[in-house]
Image (cartoon, rainbow, N blue to C red; front, side, top):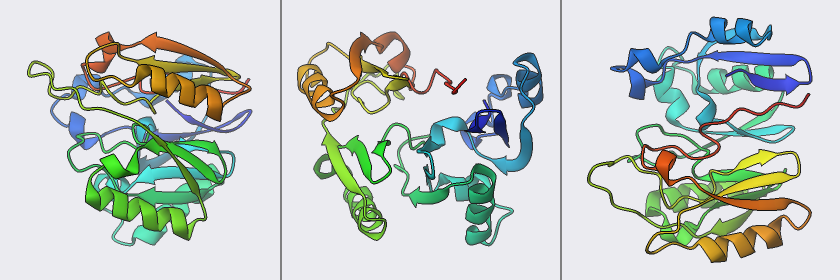
Length: 227
């Protein structure tokens, strides 16, 4: 789906993620999608799918998967600058989780405000990711709020995302928060934490396991805009 820059201003990136290279039937024709939704966006040849973009009003985060998806840009700074100009933001590039086939950012961090991120508990993450994130947080003067997560092993669904709470859905003052209600969960702890972090929002827990076993959660399956 296109990215909203302003009320009537959208940018449509190219949607050809490497993890779908053998599943072309899952790649939407973005021009048809935009036409059917009466959206006339600015199209760009930059390859970037929505799950790898976490944004605030004047800041956005992507993982370094963006460089792998756009090998024609030998100059990484040029790619970053082009995205910044398109979205009218400061772009912050964080490390991807190497074991995640998507390389998405929305399963790791989300903005609370311009200078605060909520994300997977750093001390429980891979050492390389913790090290990389710690430097980025310092460089950009960003506070980081830890959210517990847990690993759920499922031999039939190896790409399961069950256990990740930060892939929630924001709709105005409403937050739909994924919960899992299985062994090892941190559901109650995370619900209490979200009520503390977002005291003015309505937090609605929702069991999303039927989607989560296939590798996506609430932010993955939704698209929101400001009308």
